Length: 165
Image (cartoon, rainbow, N blue to C red; front, side, top):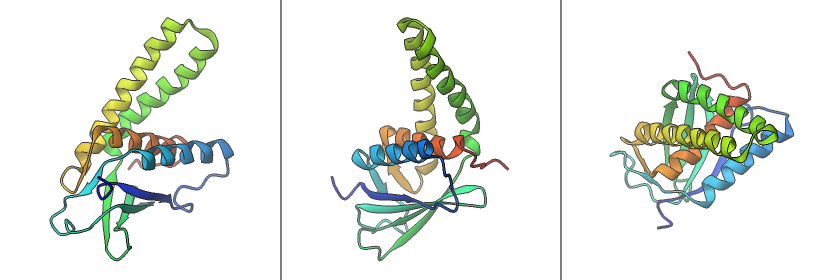
């Protein structure tokens, strides 16, 4: 259903600045994947009447990710704050496996690469589920959308954005 969907997502360049082209490219791919296939519905009692598809603007505020969520016409805005602390260990572990995977592709057998990739996917699922759970009182998403948000958050975290307290 098109109304339960993210139409656009933009990132505040001041909050998540980078001048590295490969980082910008990785973020753009993460955003593209998220926009192409997602399920997103506001269920917060005060904002439940917001009609999608939604437009989202991400920024950093008080070491949290601020999701400024607008309805299609940008007439209503809902601010949702996501703490990264519950994701901290998964992000650290995912980064290790992520690096191992790219090293493995250069040197290891397909079976070893597949084993590392299985671990990467498992961590990706865990991160997606944590995000889905953190949204659950205000926003309904499916696991695939949670995974896509995890990919985006990883790209923000990986390149110097420190959300830790």
